[in-house]
Amino acid sequence: MQANIEAPVVIIGAGLAGLTVALHLAEHRPVVVLAKRNLEEAATAWAQGGIVGVLGSDDSIDSHVRDTQDAGAGIVDEHTARFIAEHSAAAVEWLVQCGVPFSPDPGGPLGLHLTREGGHAVRRIAHAADATGKAIHDVLLERVRAHPSIQLRERWMAVDMITSRHLKRDEPPRCYGVYALDIDSGRVETLAAAAVVLATGGVGKVYRYTSNPETATGDGIAMAWRAGCRVGNMEFIQFHPTCLYHPQERSFLITEALRGEGAHLKLPDGTRFMAAHDARGELAPRDIVARAIDFEMKKHGVDHVWLDATHLGAEFLKEHFPTIYARCLKLGIDITRQPIPVVPAAHYTCGGVVTDLHGRTDLPGLYAAGEATYTGLHGANRLASNSLLECVVLGRTVAEHIRGHAAPQHIPLPAWDESQVEDADEQVVIAHNWDELRLLMWNYVGIVRTTRRLERALHRIKLLRTEIDDYYANFRVSRDLLELRNLVDCAELIVRSALVRHESRGLHYSRDFPQTLPVSFPTILVRPAGRRGGHGAPVPNFLGF
Image 1 (spheres, helix red, strand yellow):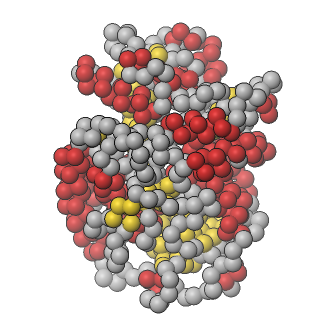
Image 2: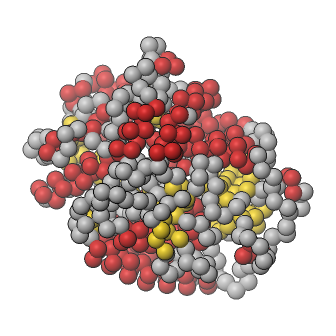
Image 3: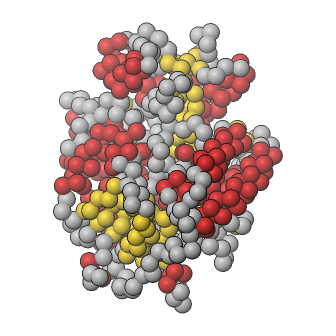
């Protein structure tokens, strides 16, 4: 085996957070990036709106912090929000230097056109038309592919962290590497690592309807939880208000920037309704808009509402929203002449693995960045376009911290043991449990919740866990099985977090506790001592870090 100094940093996930860490780290350490599907399939490429940059003369750090706190409904960590805002300009400048083709404006800051989205006081969103995430991801992926110190492994999926427990060492817990599945061969490999970085994204696929790609199965959150790390604010799942409602397109997002430019939400009879829910109308934060749409759909018994942008003009829509225009036109919807049918869909996980501003988790040697984390930035609801910003800013700090600390002494790691398992005989069990989990989460743990629904969900999750654990113990692992195992862990964390929050705040709305308490704290769950998985009742800790 190579000397310890050559042990790579293993980054799990090839979205914006993972690629940012890799690019900032590769000049100093060898890097291995694992992508469980094709490299282009990360959630970053699906982001339409843009990235926040405090750049304009009419903007300020304080203004961005205030908007982040307002959207986060009182439980945003101000220190984190300020740190992110202070580094927003540098983050955008770095992406410009990398070659990201943001939409230009000769008179704008850095020569960029800035747009506005819901919850923002001013225009501060740098964007590449309406496909910002893809533009960023394509550029960074090209740079990563060209770097000699970065090894990319497509169709490799992490199974679990390798920790002191696996080594049976009497020492404080530490992460030494990761077990990883080569999906094509079915072989599980032991990867020793100087450090492991979780950049696996969120958990949108735990819901039946989501704007997320197939990769969003909560892998990093579940693995960190099983390894003994705390998780925070898992009850706050952001439902994007406007996902395209069409039988052939269940995951296509209609960017918030369209409402930022003046599109109107309407009922089937053409009546606008947002003013009855919030004075900011269509520019209210996402949680308010999503609940308003959910309310109006149930009140009027309709399957969707309409987003009308026809008054903005055909030339404007084609220039600023070419992706949406082309995709809708392919489905027979001309957005220059017709309103767009939309519904809310699970979009962003505002909680995750508890980390500090260097990405450190509770387990030394294990870092996390991006949507898989809870840093305190998003509070009870994420402000639009703060997500890409968090990936870039904290992706850099993760790399800096790893660079500044020596790798652990090399220790031989145990190989993956599958001597007691066999090939699965019935894949239908996985498919059935997957469908049941996503449906019960949608019906019982969605936009509006009740204690009874949550308790029913928890009961069914426990039954599913028994079946999944039995399957995991007896058969060789596959991507579908690992994703299902991770989703059921995350589902339980979401439900238990929701059950202990006896108020309505931000993205968590309970009919049993409709009031918002005057003082509240993040929900931090601690795995019970001695537990090796997601089993048992996590211990709530409202004190945060």
